[in-house]
Amino acid sequence: MHILIVAPEQIPVPGSGSVEICILSIAKQLAKHHKVTIISKRSSHLPVQSHMGNITVVRVTSGSARTYITSVLRYMKRKSYDFIQVDNRPFYMAKIKKAFPRTPVSIFLHSLTFVPNTSEIKNSLRKADFIIANSSSLRQKLISRFPDTAKNIHTVELGVDTSRFRPAKKSEQKASKTKYRIRGAFTVLFVGRVIPRKGVPILVKAAHLVRKHTPIHLIIVGRGSPSYIRRLKLQAYKLGVPITFTGKKSHQEIHKIYRIADCFVCPSQKHEAFGLVNVEAMASGIPVIASRNGGIQEVVKHEHNGYLVDRYQRPSEFADYLLRLAKSPSLRDKLSANGRSDVLQHFTWSQTSTKLAAIYSKAISS
Image: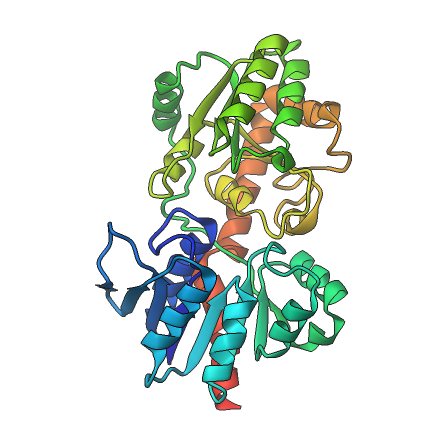
């Protein structure tokens, strides 16, 4: 097959956005058996066109959403593809389907952000041959908003590069802790956008409760507004919680930060469609404590590879599990081994691309 993937307009491919990371990771797997073209935003730091084996990345003029889709359609004119995948933008998908009515077109949705319950989105989704959701939770949310699309929605979970995200050697973890000046403390990692809905203040309060019983150090990785970061630093200072903010790390380097952790916490306060960071942590051999919401609970299995927190607005709920793990290295080892095994069985990019390719191949042959 010749598969076209149309990326969103905000970040070029390759890029550090979660959607762009998924696009390129999936494309690399699809390209082992198919020809793949990716259309993405133009960047002054990248060529207009580049090639990676069987993948061609074309970068077009962006700016506004309408400018971008106009540029995309201009490039696509008089070209043909066996299947077209549009990521996270129903409006673009509808425009492309109108221009290519005989070609199967899918919309790959990574969250609810770009699918508000409006008549425009409803009409756009109706034009898709397939709607791909990255979790059963996201699929159910979409069905509740747009019941008449149910028959077209397929679930394809995301994956992780298990060669990069792997359990750390003891020497690697020791070197990482030394780099961040952590001595003898139970090290807890958070990775994600540092915004209110991600629940970092809950984690800081939980660490304060744990610190009464054992040394603990928080590592917060991700971008946040300066004012919000200042508030979190002040909160940690008042509660006496040792905390390090690293800022955003490039995805090419992010796997190294997991080597520092004894535990990973995802205290999200709002619906998470999938929660890829939890898979990255599990692949890295780290037990996970996460809020029981959305697609997270399809990845984290309570008392098997981590813990799910039901009352995730309560710091004490996270603190109980943190303390349990801090006091038992053998428990951490057990959950870590189960998590790594689960990722290898269910959450690799190869498995993601195989599921997609099967859906797309069937569409072409039918």
